[in-house]
Image (cartoon, helix red, strand yellow):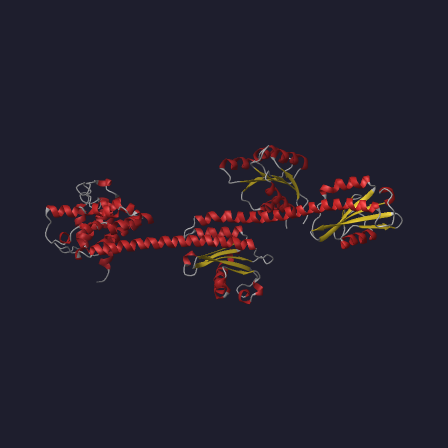
Length: 126
Length: 505
């Protein structure tokens, strides 16, 4: 099933990137890929993805900075951000809660559930 | 069908087409998927082109054909392994003009050879790229599956670790398994250990809970009847409809997986899943996962069984030890058991936790163990004891303590044993501790010990009634005995005595 929606993956680890790319493409999404927060922010601005999946710990610009710097863009054009991270600390909760349309998923995560989450946000029924 | 990944080659093929004044197309098994002239689906398809690409795929070698007047077609097969998956086709308007004066119309023209080599290299590149793409995709698919498994396991593993049988946590565990593995129902069924059994189902099915619990009972019965369950570690029904023994257990189709919860030769029961989603089947990885969870469960049960057995063994060993000592003196036979019994009544009233109860029980059972070193004639002497004999008797708490000290399991019970002859006013032995400084267990044992001594026959006097004994103890409260402990003890016995008074003789 083709879905005319763009999902951006921001992840420095290639295998995780590949898995997400594979899962999303298989679910019919168009996929954009970035290896760090800086590339990710650029793609958010130029390509206007409908959903962003981001890791927290990355070189160049980390996931938190990416979220904080892209959060302003959501006022005009909302999009979903999913922060994928290892065991979440209390203070991580706090800044994620301050972001618009942003949720987190703990690692180890289920790729299938992640896609379901995006489907739900974008109102895609399978 | 295998996907051709052509994005990285689009530029290369376009430049080549422009340089050689030709058109380049890539075909999969049925249609062109790339063309330097147009993008799909706008690619014009002629009958000749279709036939030619089929010929290339079919013969699986380089082909050259001349169409009509001077149109040349060159084709190179694309394959994945040995399987032909498509063709790379180049069309030139004039083979002579573009390929250094090759002779038109002949298949072995030098221009044709050049073209063959060029297309061969290109096809090789495309094949290699598609091959690695395919490999990456299958690795990604594998990894995705592995991540799903890890996710399920990480959800459930923590639960298993903190599991205690029987307890409420097995419900949480079953729910986690059901939720994480996307099932409609999960169960733990242990025949003979019904307390451990649990069946959970999705909220939407809660109205049918009764029927589903019955289904689980019937499933387990059916599995146990099946001879395969004797030898196999798991039992799987992917389509209930195809199995008459199982199809009649539920009106709608379902699939069902149960794995044995076992440790070495002991089969404890089954961990199982049921799904009513008809279009899916159980995957190998799900089976593996459930089996490893069942293995962990079995270890938990094995461990708690072992613990239970050891605890009981300890109590039994202690009791027989005590019996052996008490056999020396007919008057004290059963004394320790009774003292322990009274202490347990107090423990229940005071709501001590299980661990504390055990510690107190062992201390009470063993409080006189030191008498093993006291000569029989002193213990049984009907008259009052002289100074020397008294000294000997008073050594028994310390002796008991010394005897039991090497036993680690009893270390918490030692204070109760050592101090059970201390007096609340500080006049007792061995240390002369006073009031609250005397360990709580020792104060409780002192009360129970005194009560039993008063209410049984002694070499030097007859047994007193419970009421008399309680009255005497009340007088000793605050001097010999802890008044608080005496009050608790009186409360327990007054209840019992009232019940006795009301009971017909």
